[in-house]
Image (tube, rainbow, N blue to C red; front, side):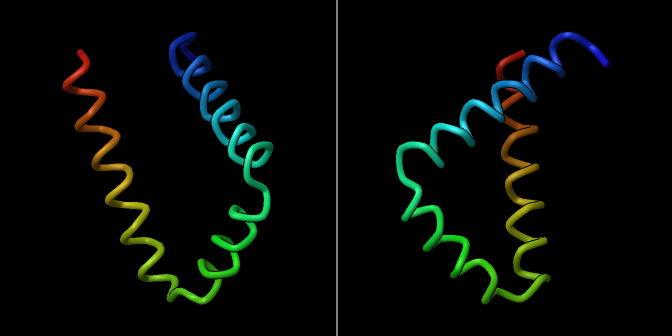
Length: 61
């Protein structure tokens, strides 16, 4: 695994941890709403997030 990928994964953990630490009740409410969504809808949201992330990453390089 490359150092850059490992660093990126570590940053994801830091950001996720910050959200849980700063706003645990909001995170819980969001998750309660997310479980109501159709799995297909969640996949679309995931695909869009991946696309945005890849485009942003490409623009940075």
